[in-house]
Length: 141
Image 1 (cartoon, rainbow, N blue to C red):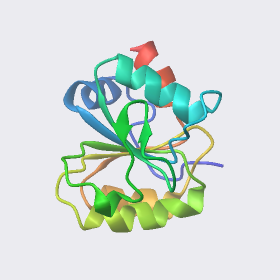
Image 2: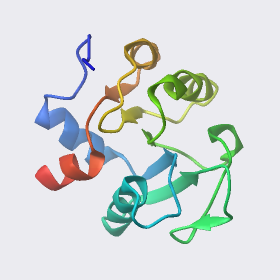
Image 3: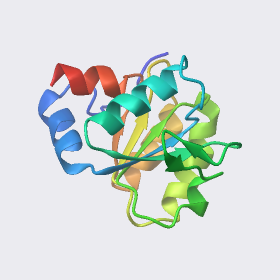
């Protein structure tokens, strides 16, 4: 699982810039189960002042926020997409991002690498992070 093209993964200044510029984070794969990593990370980010937008196939609310079934359903502004889904799903996530004009960052969580989708996102002008936990990186800064 290797990132085959340069991302912001190893640049602390770019990581800091992401967290300083982002206000709203859509989280595909945000589980309602408190013991799941997606839930723990979302709860942490929410506690740090970020607005989270859960993307999940079930539930009406998670962490007090309205749940959407897909990125295309979200009507409010999204600054970053923080994905907790299988790597191959990143392709359809980038497809959905391409139809929006607000997303600036695609973040693929720890253990998730999809170089083709990441390259497409980068070609769209997005900052891309792969195989990193947003909570861990935020705490490190």
